[in-house]
Image (cartoon, rainbow, N blue to C red; front, side, top):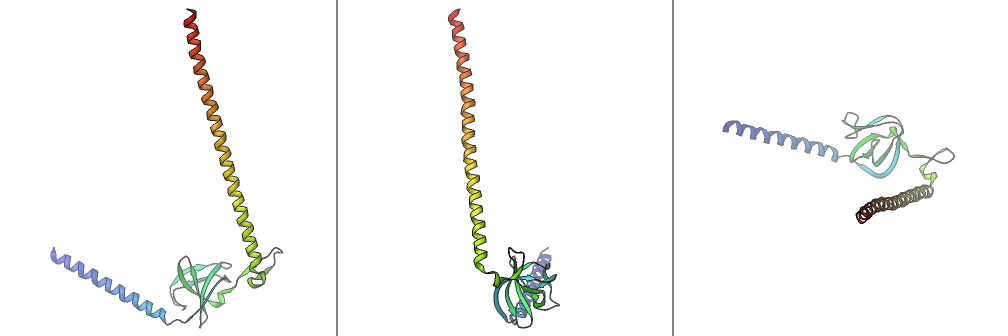
Length: 178
């Protein structure tokens, strides 16, 4: 029994050491990539897959559909964008991604630089104001509902108390008459 335990422990440490060497090799492989920082939102032009490394043979991390917005964190020298999505980072070829386009009121697609951030901020402020107004409306309705609940409870209690008092008085009156 002791011999089997020692073998299991040795096997465990051997597996762990292989896993560590595997992680180190993968980390060293990714260190040679030169990435220029970007930090902007872009649109996926065609269906594609993000890979672990900027290489067509690298394992896929996630896939994107055409028209999806992606957060581009950097750009490599050899034609790849580094993208980030839900804590995962991967690489997509440049030809699969185009500059972000937004839809304006006249239904015309324009580049984000032409659209201007002022209009976007105004729209966000208006949406925020609308949300605040809706929350305030719901709060006032809840207060009104609580008030009416209290009024109804007081009325019901009043009716029961009146019924009890009148029953007691009726009983006293019958005793007096006898």
